[in-house]
Image 1 (cartoon, one colour):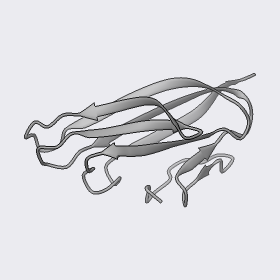
Image 2 (cartoon, rainbow, N blue to C red):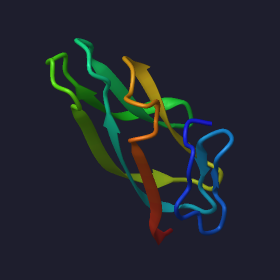
Image 3 (spheres, rainbow, N blue to C red):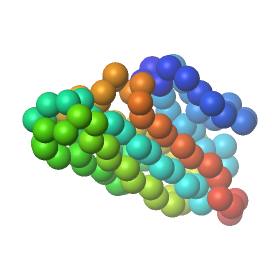
Length: 110
């Protein structure tokens, strides 16, 4: 998988092997991510995917800075069994996904 460590996974709905979160029930979920690009003249784009479709993206530009980062967050209406994951659309991340984070939780059930 993308991630080498899971800090909190109550209910085990995030699968570390596939790096996919599966909604246990219908509701409003909050997701956020923070990614760090490598030191080069290259743009990165990371998208949050819901059932295979991009919902939001974040970009870090091609400036020659050592550790430029990109972040975004969203509230999503999810049905039971909906899937969410992060996809690196372009560019390279520093240390792979080592310095990046991805969080999600149920805000309230519907």
